[in-house]
Image (cartoon, rainbow, N blue to C red; front, side):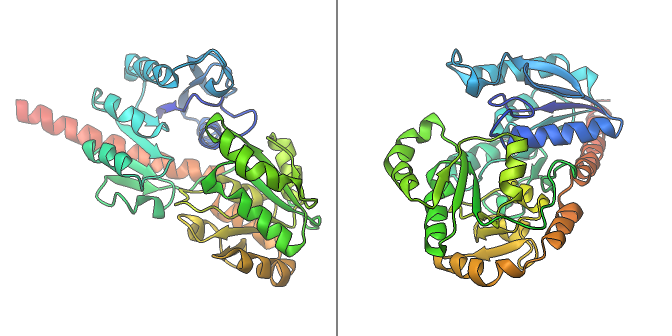
Length: 355
């Protein structure tokens, strides 16, 4: 198939440091190219890809200090997609609802993967206004605020199987990787580590929007002798940090849409402790790839009683079975074919009605 793959422009594809959606877009694009599809990737010009690259901006916007209006770049990128639409069999947007207005301007099959949260009233209003366009959810729980939408499938994220290495003998510390923000609850991760008496390594980015929160709430907690703040890490550093951890902490307090960091940990054989929010009960196989908890004190008890007996090889095996990039690409290909067929059918019916 000829596929237009549209990525957000905030990070390059793949991201040089932190980045979730752009990272998934990279894995998906590479697998589709490997499978023989003709993919055009719309992303920042500093992206690295096996597909044909159509630059939507110069460098990734988060690291471009000259960028003042990120949405302007996204709108111009979608205009470029529409100019080239005749070259594709399907258009796949990964920029949430930003692409919906452009979907109305094309007769081409148009699929949108929803990567963000849907529990906000304003967000629901937008998707409701564009009801009918095919959407892909990244977990079943993500759909709950918008059950009437045209959900084409739920497709869990996947990783290349050779990206992270199994470590059968872990170190003596816990890991937290993500973004410093209230909903990610790094303060809870620190509390769990301190209560358990286990060192914690934190690899996280701090966005400008969260700088005040970091300075006021999190930075004072980093002074504890059991806590080490590493900052942002690349894939190689993440492999070492996560793979050698006793467990990976994911104590979020928001309706998690998926949680890519969790399957990165599983790929290393590192069990995940995740709070029961959003997708987490779908992603963690309780007692196999990790454990689900509610209170911080519950996580401490799990660390003491259950984590030492977990089979890290079995954890890795479940990752390979459920969360490979090859499986993700095959799932999307099935959606592309179905949506393309449905769109062609609608077009034929319209032409028949006119004649």
